[in-house]
Image 1 (spheres, rainbow, N blue to C red):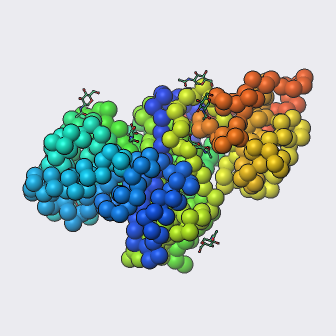
Image 2 (cartoon, rainbow, N blue to C red):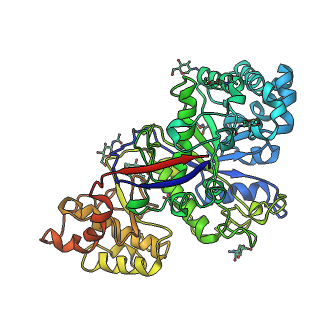
Image 3 (cartoon, rainbow, N blue to C red):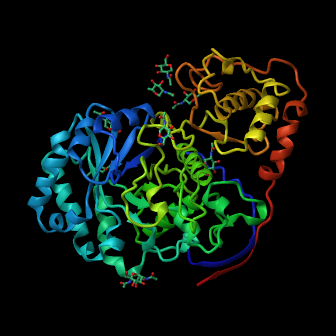
Length: 493
Ligand SMILES: *[C@@H]1O[C@H](CO)[C@@H](O)[C@H](O)[C@H]1NC(C)=O
Ligand SMILES: *[C@@H]1O[C@H](CO)[C@@H](O)[C@H](O)[C@H]1NC(C)=O
Ligand SMILES: *[C@@H]1O[C@H](CO)[C@@H](O)[C@H](O)[C@H]1NC(C)=O
Ligand SMILES: *[C@@H]1O[C@H](CO)[C@@H](O)[C@H](O)[C@H]1NC(C)=O
Ligand SMILES: *[C@@H]1O[C@H](CO)[C@@H](O)[C@H](O)[C@H]1NC(C)=O
Ligand SMILES: *[C@@H]1O[C@H](CO)[C@@H](O)[C@H](O)[C@H]1NC(C)=O
Ligand SMILES: *[C@@H]1O[C@H](CO)[C@@H](O)[C@H](O)[C@H]1NC(C)=O
Ligand SMILES: *[C@@H]1O[C@H](CO)[C@@H](O)[C@H](O)[C@H]1NC(C)=O
Ligand SMILES: *[C@@H]1O[C@H](CO)[C@@H](O)[C@H](O)[C@H]1NC(C)=O
């Protein structure tokens, strides 16, 4: 991050963005530098148990591709950096690659994308000159096998090709890559493919020398005096993740290409690090990934492209203990190899999100303080008059039996009933709204299209301030006033 110093006080502008009905998903990267990697069959069983709908592989592992057949999981396969040169120089090598690694598994394995290399421009710059030829050769091979409408070709790039990603509106790609980037964007436009981006707020934060607060990297709300605003557009950035995606949209726009969607092929947060890596912690990883999932599934885009959902693949499924580098490098996994989660994380049913913004649910934040959550739950089921029958033992929403799930149910029940009379979704900062229907199995949340309780109106008469008083007063200062913005200074290195 090149922003040297941010002196500013800023605003709270609710941007009133509503997603269109394009849908959004969160998938996961599967790296295999793991010493006790489960069998391919077990990996697929683990994916299904966690209702993961999209995966990205770094290569085209034959046994995993076979195990994924008939799983309904969408798969992105990878051309390794070692393979890029050969494929770029030889159409027949590209055709052989597609036949062996894609066509042979279709349609029973649902391969939908080929990622060509990994951060080629920054990791193997000598291959940059053939990168787009490699993509073209692969695309032609897909055309020849009639798979080009199902399988898209793109290439993940790092944030590092944008020297100054903040403010997003003035970002441009490093001009040494002008001609490669131009050809790349032309290719993506012609083939209706997405721009693939690896965007890591973890590095943006840890390499930022304290310029940005950690809350900004973790999608936490910022106090009004610390809001991050682009001084040119006055767009308000709730998260570094959104700002990184927007920096890429503006860089693409600077080349005169519009309408190329961005898919985030990698993001995440390590949960363990060396003694010099204090930010790699379970708490931060849990916060980042849970908030990321909520953010993505809300199906809105970043401020400059509000209708482009930010489909995202989390890095990564398991810790890759065999990877070289600092301790944190080996600790990005969200699941242990026995399939249990490293920290509570809900990846489930992301594909069901349809972006129908008429339904908004109120749920507990996964990383909220547990005492506050307990207070919020007690309040919602008591004074708040939420119907908490479904979370009692033996009832449909009892499981999973944890505070976040129970509070989500109660908060939402309260919110659906009381919203129209001033009830808010705040609960001392432990709640948030989402377009993602939290219903699962026979547990239906109020407001869900299939919910039997969605029609319920408040069960008893109430005065506007009674149910809302506790939560409304907390929320007002955060959400309802527009504070005039004054941007004092922005200095760049
Ligand atoms: C594969 O994924 C695509 C894209 O979501 C979907 O349209 C298609 O129905 C899937 N195919 C199979 C066989 O599941
Ligand atoms: C742009 O990329 C070139 C080649 O990798 C590098 O030498 C240069 O420092 C980069 N420029 C900026 C401003 O980062
Ligand atoms: C790259 O493109 C930008 C914008 O089109 C232009 O200003 C710059 O001079 C170009 N740089 C090179 C090295 O061609
Ligand atoms: C790209 O999309 C346009 C419009 O949806 C369509 O006409 C065209 O055939 C598509 N091209 C490819 C290569 O998928
Ligand atoms: C799974 O593995 C982790 C780490 O080794 C361990 O802490 C956990 O108890 C295991 N879970 C089960 C259900 O065996
Ligand atoms: C979705 O996320 C955007 C960006 O963080 C936010 O502005 C918007 O209010 C969210 N919408 C819902 C329904 O949560
Ligand atoms: C997820 O979706 C599937 C298919 O729609 C459904 O059978 C399953 O019960 C859902 N699971 C949860 C936890 O919502
Ligand atoms: C969106 O949800 C509302 C209320 O649940 C429903 O009436 C409407 O048909 C839905 N629209 C779509 C496009 O699914
Ligand atoms: C909702 O109900 C309809 C009709 O009963 C059913 O087809 C659909 O699968 C249900 N959706 C969910 C998410 O349960």
